[in-house]
Image (cartoon, rainbow, N blue to C red; front, side, top):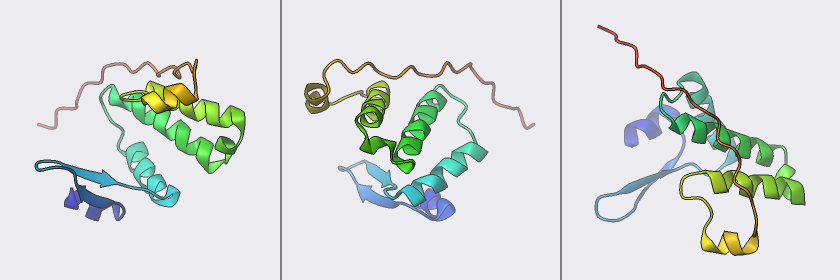
Length: 114
């Protein structure tokens, strides 16, 4: 993780239990650094769909759309489609939110460099 942090020049590493670490990037400016990295070196798994949704969420925040009711609902809809979805508290606060459609990602073969 330290190598990733040095390479990107952003983020902080936090110990998250005995055998686990978190790498966190918190400012929009620094998140843009990470997005630029993954735009240049795209993921080759179905996680790329999550990346595309996350990138949409960042764009909403950058454009301050999340400050409107419609924009906030879009943001919650994206969150509902990612990883573990919405927490119970968010489900209570935003009942009936429909998760955003995940982009369909085709399986990608890894290039053989031999």
